[in-house]
Amino acid sequence: MEKTDKILDLFKNDKDAYHSGEEISASLGISRQALWKHIEKLRETGYAIEAVPHLGYKLLGVPDRVLAPEIKWHLNTKTLGKTVYSYEAVGSTNNIAYKLAEEGAREGTIVIAEEQTKGKGRLGRSWISPDASGIYLSCILRPEILPNEVPAITLVAAVSAVKAIREFSGIKALIKWPNDIIIADRKAGGILTELKAEMDRVNFAVLGIGINVNTKKSNLPKGATSLKEESKSSRDFSRVDLIRAFLEAMDREYLKFKKSGFSAIRSELKSYSCTLGRYVKIATSNGKKVQGKATDINKSGALVIKLDNGTKQLFLSGDVTLLR
Ligand code: BTN
Image (cartoon, helix red, strand yellow):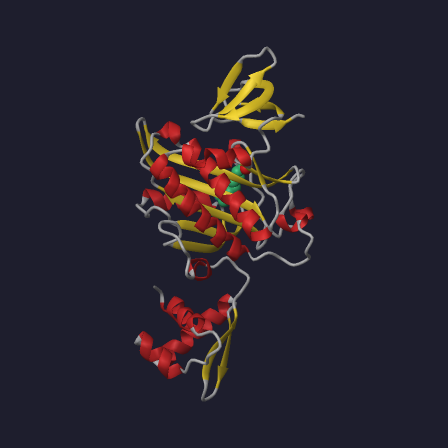
């Protein structure tokens, strides 16, 4: 743990107390001068720290930023978020996480940023990621599954995100199979899972999730929405609290998935689906396009489409448009 994290820990463990410089520097094994430098560094990051002569320091406020110590603070997870890298602006958190995974970063490592300048969406699209308003998060996973089972991880993340949004905000988010988070028929989030694999073995997966949280309409692409746009309150949501809720939900769902496979989350996924029962168009990456009624998500997570001629087809991935 870094020294600044330890200082924050001390403050947060006894929030209303003043902590004397003597007490803090002794417990960290550093000089008073070094402590002062760490306090200044925390202030520069946006922490409001009061210093009262003869009493000591007190934490008055934390910045509204997605900082690693705030995300990790008493996070109730077994695997996710034990290591968190937080950045101001990056190209894409997925690219950073991919590189870290290649260098051996452990499972559950999180990369998060306030802003992405080259945010990536599915199918070569871009993901608009304006500063300090959304969640742009990537997670390194090392599941012992076959490459063809990886699409299920996107579904695990979608269920976790919807659960977290519902619990946190009360907003009825839904899943458009396989990776869209939908609120009131508009896209509020998406998931991009990237993979390094051999024929019969997954080296790692990078699970990237973007959620429009406090994003203003003028900064959103056409047809998209944000939690703030859909909520009745004029207050901003705490992105840190939502990230923590997502990581705790994803940690539980991912463990269930590793233990029992996709069947562990299938019924929940179906209950949150806005795709099932609808007449849809699906386009696959090999250029195939079909239309029909989405009737089921099968035991492997594939979407079952009943075509107009009555036959059924399975899709493990694809771009779905809801027609009616
Ligand atoms: C989609 O719906 O097309 C997927 C969007 C995924 C966006 C996230 S934001 C964090 C991570 N980093 C990226 O560059 N993309 C994903």
